[in-house]
Amino acid sequence: MTAPGPRRGAPDRRAWILGTLRTVGFLSVADLARRLGVSQMTIRRDLHELQANGRVRLVHGGAGLAPRELRRAAFPETEHTEAQERVARHAAGLVGSGDTIAVDAGPTGVAITRALPASFTGCVLTHSMPALAFLTRERAGRVVALGGEFLPARSAFVGPTTEAALTQLRARTFFVSPAAVDARGLYAQSPAEASVQRRLMDIADEVVLVASHEVFETSAPALAGPLDRLTAVVCDRRPPAGLEAALERAGVVPRVVGP
Image (tube, rainbow, N blue to C red; front, side):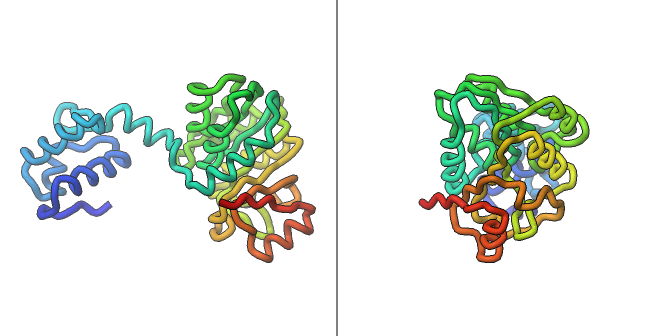
């Protein structure tokens, strides 16, 4: 993130300070003054204002994120779009009150957990930290946390420990939210995450792809599985023609949930 010049106002400086703290964790007053081209007194005024608003915590010589901002950075529960919310609500409507379900990492997975009805008393398996945070705080029923190595880019756990936790588990439905989908299959941004998704598919009776149209328009490097692993697709727009034809060959008809 490029630092704003000294002629820019306090709002720009403070936004830059917050954004940079989310990346580096701590900034000294002296470093901030140098990088922003203003006096240390000006930086202290900015930090005191940010602290008064609950955004940063002043420590000796500088500042770090306040606990509220740390939680927001670690648990991005609201970073889903209206389209993701729409398909998540439809997916949650497929869940029986006592079902055991598995929920993928990413914003759509979090949106599904938030959309589960109050009557849900079943069990949720997930490696998503934001989903776990929401479920343990807001929902009744059982929650099984699939721990392991933390992957910051997805706020999720991956690796051998995560996969080993799945060995003795079973789910009626796995709601998978890949990074990309094309006629060849489902893709993740890393081999480690793709491997966890494959293991979750293995333990589920049904695998439901829940996706907004963005995943049909992008690419990702790690193949998680072919389209014939799917039993259903919930999306906000019709897939591209080539993908729709491939889904038809796999025996899957997308459920398009419009606005």
